[in-house]
Amino acid sequence: MAANPEWYRTPFEILNDLGITEPQDIDIEAIAEDCGATIRYLPLTGCAARIMGYKNRAIISIDENTRRPRQRFSAAHEVGHWMRDRGQLAFKCGSESFVREWSAENPETRANRFASDLLLPAKMFRAKAYKLPVTFETVRQIGDIFCTSLTATAIRLVEYGDLPAIIVCNGPRRREWFIPNGEVRGKIFLDARPGKGSIAEALLRGDRSDIAPREVRSDAWFDHRNAANYWVHEDSIPVYDGSVLSLLWWKDETQLIQIDNDIEARGAWRSDYRRDD
Ligand SMILES: [Zn+2]
Image 1 (cartoon, rainbow, N blue to C red):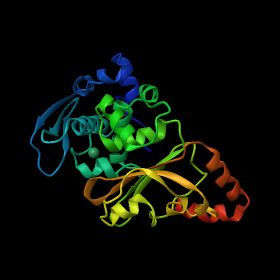
Image 2 (image 1 turned 45 degrees about the vertical axis):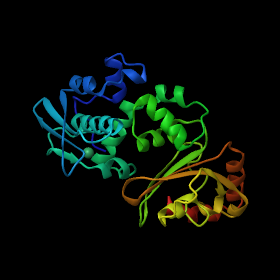
Image 3 (image 1 turned 120 degrees about the vertical axis):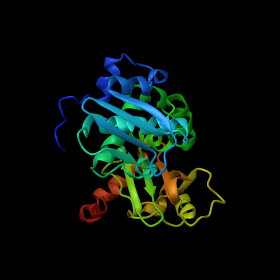
Image 4 (image 1 turned 180 degrees about the horizontal axis):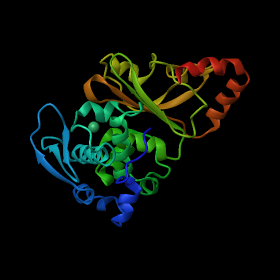
């Protein structure tokens, strides 16, 4: 990744400079002004947000016909472009960027990471998410506190929650991205697509008849030796454009340790499986 320009401040530094310590004080308009950008709301077609900058000033335009959490995220995403990608062509950012661009290394992903660090800062988030189950119900509760969109809040819950968890986004034809937290990384590996018995597989087929969060067999998601003997909690919901977001989590580490031991017992298998990582 290119070095940060001299005007760059991290989201942590920006919040610190403004003395913001509580979720309700994360005022995106004031923060953008502090960074030299004015936010305006108007009807936009063809994109959810855009930024036009000249020298040290920028105008961020946000589609007035979207919900407030999405507007805030779009605005914070544009501030992210402004802090890092200033001097490049103006950016126009579509709704799909906010759902799909989370794992590749590109300006859209970096702007999304910037936005979530700004709107869902680690310390404040951990205080609110402590020991809560990794479900979209929890995501909605926390999203209400921080006034943030579903995808961004769900990723945060996986990253900063206390339980072993993975979030996966499957598009209609392929997996878009997945993010494991530190408790899971390197211990268990996802199949390319969710299998039969998972809620996500049904949703991708358009079957919404039974989407309540529940335990599903581990082999619906993971291909490890005794996958059929294990269970994982799944909560999946349809999101943008036929995509499905899934939260997968374990109540404690015991099962993961067991799986890890299985894998250790077959060392060669692990190196094979890394292809999917
Ligand atoms: Zn963008």
